[in-house]
Image (cartoon, rainbow, N blue to C red; front, side, top):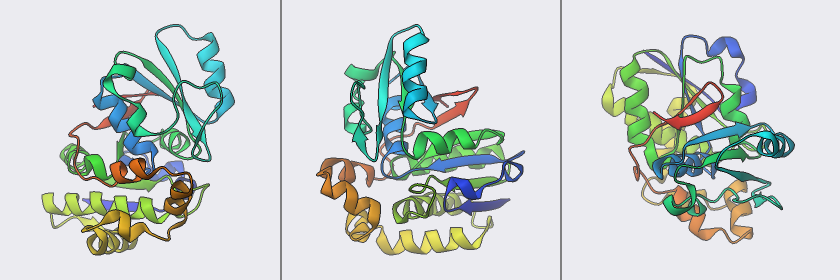
Length: 238
């Protein structure tokens, strides 16, 4: 079985996804937020491509909904929640439909629609998402959300964590060069993920916003055995 990888979702043409299992990785912070919301029993998450789309859906849709998201890591005025996973407690999100817009993550997961299965992964569910993807038996495509369409070290490191879990399941998996680089970066960093991310652009930006608790949370490993699945326009528990 082959495992291929991409540093940012714009690098992936739809033809590379057909008949494959895709895992979207957005380490800071969309994957962790989505996983946490699903673990805390939200009804579903509706990812959108931009803020205006989210607001329009919220305006016309019916149901018990929350409008959620960020622009440049900051909560949008008038939205119920931002993009901190710590906001998405069970008390807040249980049974709610979350209309969700982020700068990178929500766009990235929608871009993978041609894949046969689409999962959301990062450090906090690495073992679970690796097992889920592997048991299906198709070729796996790991896709980093990146930052504004470009390489982001935090995503690569989280992808390396997922690769490490896949290779624990089957050391004969055929991984591409970026998988190998990501695995090396992760193995060198895993004793202290946040320390290893010091100096990286997105990490430093979130530090400037004083989102220290988010950074600590997003770097934890295997907090959840939940695997969010994107299908038919919504994200639900797998």
